[in-house]
Amino acid sequence: MYAVFGKSLKKEEQRKDKAASKLSPSDRYYSNKNAYQISPDYYDIARCHEFIDLAKKTHDVRCIYIAQTEKVTVEGRPKISKKTGKPLFRFVRLTGI
Image 1 (spheres, rainbow, N blue to C red):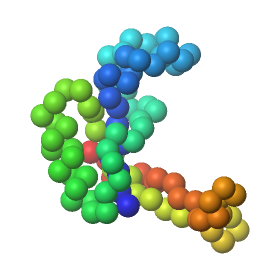
Image 2 (cartoon, one colour):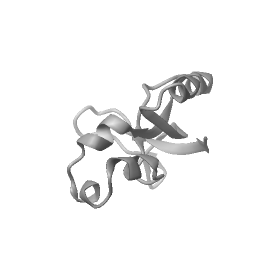
Image 3 (cartoon, rainbow, N blue to C red):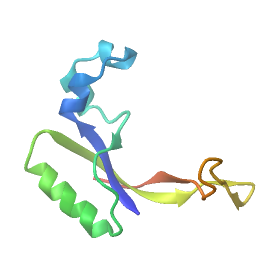
Image 4 (cartoon, one colour):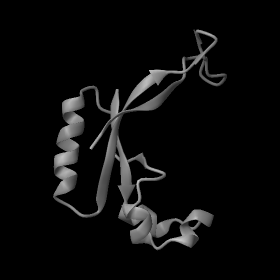
């Protein structure tokens, strides 16, 4: 699974936490810190590139990097979710844009 991480101008304008109060929404939007998932999960990295191409046509979304899912392991064994009983996954930065 792959996903595009970046920032949304609309979400940055709505943030009201401590980090948000120090910078203007446009300053937060153009910084590379604290990126979050802005695309759906895709099974193919080519779909991520299509999402990026479409996002470049608008100024509401800024793409920063593509990430890939990876199993969370503890001492060489997969970590299991207590709620679902299934292995946990996390996104790992794959490539910058």
